[in-house]
Length: 143
Image 1 (spheres, rainbow, N blue to C red):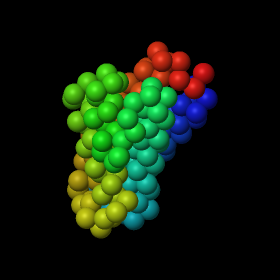
Image 2 (cartoon, rainbow, N blue to C red; image 1 turned 90 degrees about the vertical axis):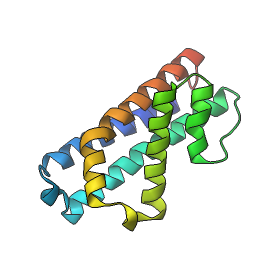
Image 3 (cartoon, helix red, strand yellow; image 1 turned 45 degrees about the vertical axis):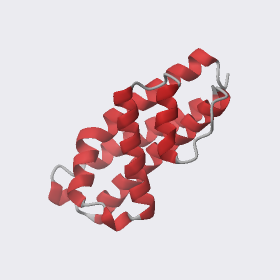
Image 4 (cartoon, rainbow, N blue to C red; image 1 turned 180 degrees about the vertical axis):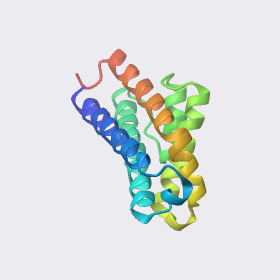
């Protein structure tokens, strides 16, 4: 699991960074500081990208159809039994958020970014990470 392990370690490291950043922003007003806001968004984006890279690697190793879009990745993982429907929907939403960050940065409201960072990001990222790693271990991917 060398490649998968590297991705997982990257995600875990970034989630620690996220906790540290959010510890410095106890309110929405503090979160608005550019270095906190943009650091938070970058950390979340890099976590989601690592999950996508892991997922696409797993899909390829399982011999399944390569996703034609990042969003399709969540649906393929659901069909493969890696994610249940609820988690696949969460991952699809995360992918959509990542796409928004990458392609239309200014359209992310500070309030929405704050809510996601505080309430969803770490929990949802960890859930997807756990499911992908579980399937990778079961399938002997990247031993």
